[in-house]
Length: 91
Image (cartoon, rainbow, N blue to C red):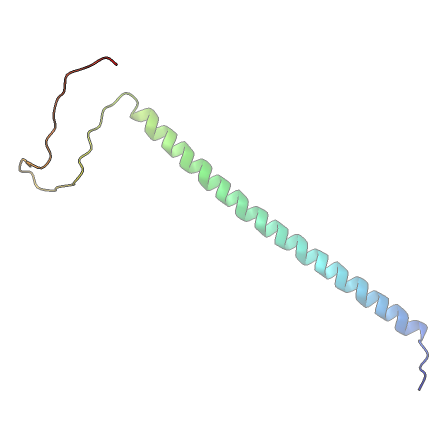
């Protein structure tokens, strides 16, 4: 059985193909925009963390801090945390 193609059918098929391409391009642009927003959010978060670290380091510039290996909450003197003063040597 031989079927003849009508002009209306060909135009309808071409318009459907063009419509699908347009919809796919639009969805692609939305996905790219969403990815860019996520990257901008991560960049702002990293920038805020950097700024807070810089402020903290500027406040503590020149200060000495002694850190204990084990953290004790008791007020009694602990024998496990001894601080030893050593003589200065030039290298």
